[in-house]
Image (tube, rainbow, N blue to C red; front, side, top):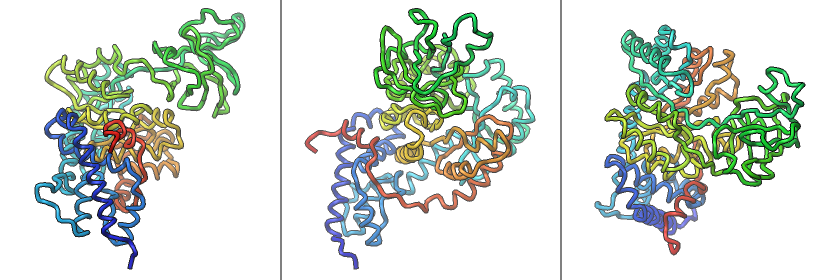
Length: 502
């Protein structure tokens, strides 16, 4: 028989429950401002953050040792699960104090939110499938019809590409294909957001040696110095000068900040800032082709960039999106005030309001995730997209597996549907053959409510393979046991929302 003292274990659980209620009380004002259908979800999110701000690994192990259910896999109803364990340990809980967010009720709540956002599916147990549309889809009704017949549930139109003329053709083909196949298909439209991309202003070569296309790229070496600036005034001809295009980026930088170019292939460090010019030392090039090309993405994970999440181009696109889309994807969200701005702009347009999908793609959005979710809860329905491309560059590739798990857990605690995006079966889509690691990744995507597929030449094959993988993966979805070390996201939120004396 175990030597664990059950009374002590129960007291530890009681302290955790007390902390949950304290955090709920301290955030009463935030709860009061969420939509009335989101109150239960907001409370459960706060309870979960309270729990995950603590190190309860020893408690988890003791619960397992004495044959009691642990607190793992209970994100959606965490206080109810804790109370159930305490009752097994002999605690009598007054009826009025019994938590209303239970395994059964939270499951029904999550399913209703999921169905509203993503629509009906052929196989209820599987995630919905979102397909990114290529420009050619505007003239290919047959392709869209085949996508629907093979399992597409949501059509993604990226407003960073094409224009309203092309988008209308896509939408007409979707409508026609739905009528022909008797399938339903939600329309998701992505706001472009700020595009921080390389623009080569000066290559460092003598002018008489420049070729017509030489400014499309510039050769570099590790240890080399390049400059970030918006023009070439004040530079020597030998200097390499690159603009990040978006205004106020350079003024937001500070010495020591990391700079990533081209999906993190090139890494640099800011070593000096002077007069809206940033001197950057190249510290790593993870490619045999040692060059910087035009129009490649740039990331500044250490910098608090003073640029708007909602651009003038986005605002111009909003009337069309509100008129045609079921879901609108919001890029470059960093804090809760970004959501407030978009909702204000949408409210100015009219009564038809698409559901908001918040794209988590910056390190700042990860840190602020709880507050972002609570702001989203002011709406009856919204979702989250884990935009793993930029996010991996921002937080570091080695942390991606950990962080995407944490986002999934916290969103489940908030009963918020999640879209798993970026590079799902990417090699299969481009070449027709998947890598082994992609198969594992696709299986893990079953933890999300929706999976996004990028553009490619083998999209039908990707959908068929993905459905086959998901059918197998979902049968094992709850077999994994987790131990609860503290989450920094939760610790940071609790630290800012609890009196110091507690």
